[in-house]
Image (cartoon, rainbow, N blue to C red; front, top):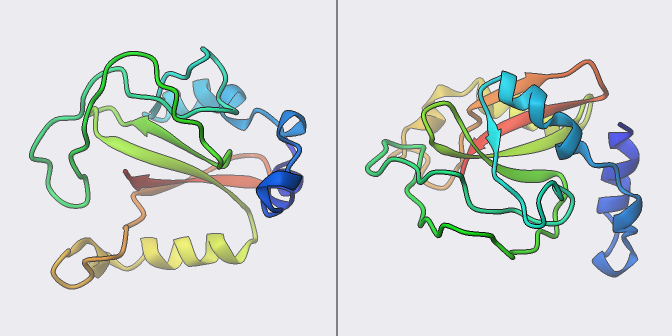
Length: 151
């Protein structure tokens, strides 16, 4: 998957993006992410990871500690169109809601995420109430990594 081309395309204004030509990163990565403990939200239409972000299979547990937040659960097909094909909703093995972002290796964005991941003070909401902490950075054998954040 040519993520660098995808990220360059996604940096264009929305009306200039050629969405049909973008690679289906999520469709091909779903089994790999599941093997690493992350189940992507079901999509509508089914299997169209390139166009929508949907509701989880199961609601997240309530009263989760920081950094996991409770979110409303609406069962059934979703029709919230995503304008960002490099971010998708998922749940971890404890059914907590997360988002996963694809980030190019060697990018400034990945460097920032690594610095955030190495700063444990960010997990204290009293100290840094507006910073979303990095939960995990998953390396791949391709030219990108997956960054996992609480939803």
